[in-house]
Amino acid sequence: VRKSGFRQDLYYRLNVITMKAPPLRDRREDIIPLADHFAKKFAHQCGRRIAGFSTAAKAYLQSHSWPGNVRELENAIERAVVLGVEETILPEDLPETVREDRPAGISATLYEEAVENAKKQVLIRAFERASYDHDRAAELLGLHPNYLHRLIRALDLRKTLNSARRATG
Image (cartoon, rainbow, N blue to C red; front, side, top):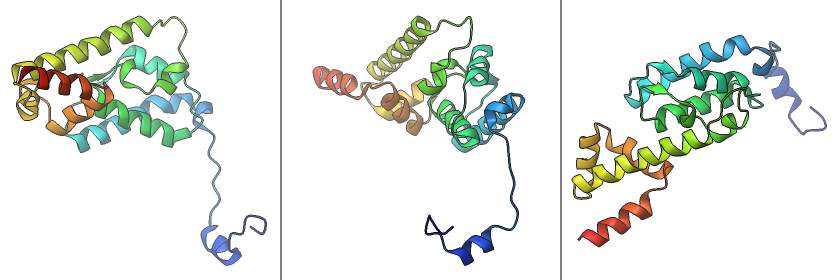
């Protein structure tokens, strides 16, 4: 209190109950139930349907060290829900920091690249069919326009789509 400059009276007002919670890395059995909870929460907020996590995605979640504890897990799941395309959360939907701690037996780089390229091609074809009209492309894909914007940003497709739009018309 004295060294950090935090007001002592405020400290004692806030310090009613002290709770010690072990870090998430020491409670691995809590990771999947928490991830399921956050997935449902963010799916509801985004208006998406999430069926759950693939076996590989669960393995990544279990193998990550979670230095940011529950807040890091919550942010990772929010990202997966927002950027994922499938109803099932896949490893490529998780942040790179989570995928760096690769579980034993999973080689994902070629797979992840293939999935990302497939997503890009699907979006590019939808924009071509919609004459580069964003709302029409979203409708063709069955996606909310805001979600399509996020996908374009996440897949770094802005320049590609803008160049193609200029080239066609």
